[in-house]
Amino acid sequence: MSASQFQGAQESPLHLRVKHLVAELLAADARTEPGSVVVDEYVVHGDSRRRPDVRAIYDGKPIAIEIQLATTQIPIIIAREDFYRREGRHLIWLTWNFVPVERAHLLTAFEDIFYSHNKNLFSLDDAVVSESRERGALLVRAFWEHGDGWNSKITTLLDLEWPSSGLPYAVAPPPAWHDAFRARWLAATTVHGTPWAARKELYSELAEKLGDDSIDASMLEETDIGALLNAILSFVEGKPVGSRQGNLTELINTFLASERRFRFARIMRKVITVTGTSELLDKPSVAAKFSRAMQDAQDGPESHTGRVALLLFSELFEKRKSAS
Image 1: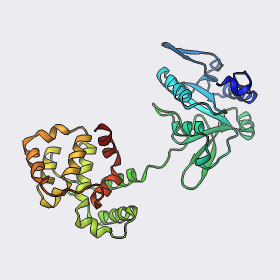
Image 2 (image 1 turned 90 degrees about the vertical axis):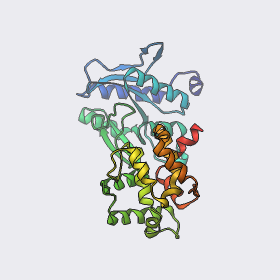
Image 3 (image 1 turned 180 degrees about the vertical axis):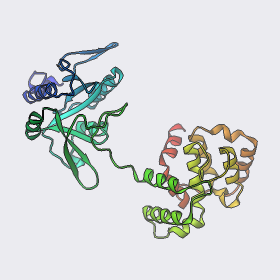
Image 4 (image 1 turned 30 degrees about the vertical axis):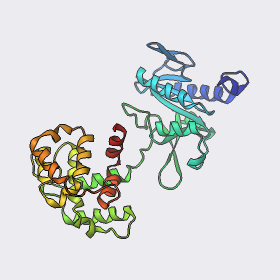
């Protein structure tokens, strides 16, 4: 299929040109181990082999650079990424003269490598090649999409983030809103609970995010959402949060000792199961607490508390759903 794109040739003239440009610039980079730049030769690992466009030892790390110009099929992209990961080689996907477009119009193959590179894309163009030659280093133009539209900058390979697993990136995406909210809630919380000043501010933000005029900070306080959040976070973190209890058994027993929290029992049962602590449910004291609490009407996903739990901890309930 790849050959048919170029009338029987295995690569386009542009692909060939870019590949040798990369090799030239990489060989001139002082961070590249002398003699380590190899173009178009197989790497063998176990029963598999791949032929990276360019490979080298850069800053002490084995790297592979694959040129992505055409609409390579996603299984091919995934297979290459898996192979280099198993082989212990850092992979960089590189394209030529990338023109930012709306995400809806981004080629599927580019979208796949965009996510592989932690929502970054790397490209070369004539200006970058010229600057690379002037500086004697392989530079790339990094693209990322934060907020409104695309951003870009020229960077060296050395300045990229090189995670131990996953592909390198130039700029990390901002944390998802729910992750940032949870981090701020945890930062404001001590063993004595979450102080009202911080709680009120976070409640107001949460109410706005829910987009329901009937929900405000006072209403969330009245429904004891703060106690529910701390209880869920305790099982996510693996230790009591916002409580002086010594362990999770004590925490859930204390949590369900209050009648106003009986309606949270079904939510907490799911949380306990998904976070891998389901053996706790077999303890007589905990089983008795849940048996009593479950006799009351329970908050479901359509309730205010259910909506909050889904908004802030959707991954818990998604895991539970996939396991059922």
